[in-house]
Amino acid sequence: MGPKILVCFLSPLQQFDAYARHIPNETVALGKFRADQAAVQSIPTEAPGWVYNKTAADLFRKRIVPDSRFANGNFLVTQGIVKQFGLMPHSDVTRIFDVPNEVMKGFPKLSPFENKRFNTCSLVGNGGILKGSGCGKEIDASEFVFRFNMAPMDEKYLEDIGNKTNLITMNPSMIKYRYRKGKGEESTIDVETLMSDLSAYGDSYLWIWAFLSGKHARSALKAQQALQGNNARNQVILPYPIVTRSILSIWRENGIKAHRLSTGLLLVSFATQVCEEVRLYGFWPFHSDRSNRRLTEHYYDNALPGEVHRMPEEFRQLQRLHDTGVLRLTTHTCQ
Image 1 (cartoon, rainbow, N blue to C red):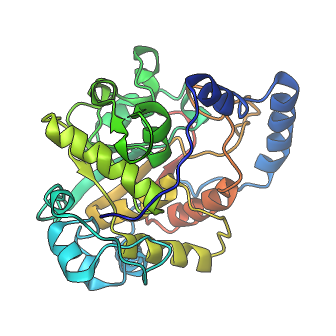
Image 2 (cartoon, helix red, strand yellow):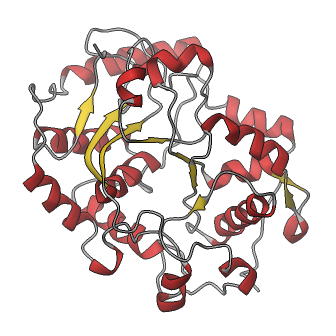
């Protein structure tokens, strides 16, 4: 049996209220815009004439995943890795989860990214800077496209964000407030709604950062089993906790003191393992662009992030990687 988890439940109205509290009123939003106008003035522009630096990129790949056991795309939970090394929360490698046989069978035998290298990858962040960018065609031209947190794919956004998706992430908390039916260990997944929402992303992989805690793991594994039991087109993939723990440590050594890395920075790190050229769009944590245009937090809404991330710190690290040719960061409109 898996670990016992204490959970609480919100009604749909409470769920909406919890989300709405993060949407600022006009006074707060305007204050955020003006503060970010000033902040942006101290942000240097990215180096012009970007050129991919393979030597620097290869050094970064080895640094971000130094353990050869998990290199070459072997950074996911698989049956072989779990049998060999166990499965634990990424924050505590001394605590091992009990993995029932029926759960183990749901893990892939091998990583779908094993020894795979895509020539070009687009990672599409959700920043408001994407609105009006016209970057859709450029994004879709990449061989592999990553998207985040079940971001909307409505027709009105496609010119700016593109239409192609090969991998979409979902936070474990979203499973709880949107797709769970019932309470406690007897709860189930509203798989019809989940599959309907996933249809916007075709047959893309569904990436869930599951092993933050026993609670998150339980939600993610229930979603995985529900999708597999209904022959869903989307394969659930889970990053292996030892690797995420190592990546978190490396970024903290580089000055990011956040309680938790964003999914964006974590996936950038993993993308360097399977992509030759990594291209970022929508990674801009400010409510003003360099031309003093007012932006929303996301291209689809203005809900502010929680306090667990340090997005400006992460952005500066991405700029440094851009300037050294490790990845390409786009913070302007596309031609």
